Image (cartoon, rainbow, N blue to C red):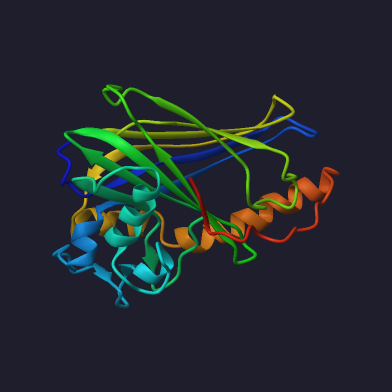
Amino acid sequence: MPAGDNALYVGEVRHARYRPRAHRFTYRVFSAFVDIDDLDADALGLKLLSVDKFNLFSIRRRDHGAKDGSALRPFIESLLAEVGLGAPERIHILCYLRMFGFAFNPLTVYYCRSNNKLTAMVYEVRNTFGDDHIYVVPFRGDHKDKPLLHVRDKLMHVSPFIGMQATYHFSAEAPDEQLRLVIRETQDNAPLLVASFVGARRALTDATLFKAFLRHPLMTVKVLVAIHYEAGKLFIKGVPFIKRPEPPQSRHSV
């Protein structure tokens, strides 16, 4: 896929928990994959998708990055500078769009590329308590965009049914006709949970957006409802509830 192409990825989010009780679910979703330079310049050129304005679909920059409505590129570049990386040629954001002004993004991902290969990924993780944390992952060497494996210690409370002593194992690659992102969570070096999103690429057009709306008219509401619904099932299964600890002092880690 050309680096500058914007897209929708339509597919499935899957979760599989292994302990202390087995629990699985799958939901149909779609995510936008958009060049942040197009967002900052408000140059998407679509009638159904707006930047920082109410529409059927919208992206609000205050939901991401510095969360003050400012341009996203300077914020991401400042994070990359902390790990010794220069400004990438292209940065794409992968996120759920707001629908009628509403969205909740448990995870927003930034794909940073130069010379047609990934140089870094940035993961923006949110919980339903209003906290967020950003994990910055630089890539060096000639990896040729094969699936990249990277590990980060868990630094922010996400689920009230998983403690803080956990590790994230990310597996990702540059999206093409298919996007695949897998996060394996472990505790005490043993598998705990696997979360994944696999989607097929669609061109980002008004027609594609309208079709996505017809097929998933309440998707952004469903995301938040599903989080609480699945949490309720875990509670019924007797999985211990863990009180939310204080969030980390810094919003990001490198």
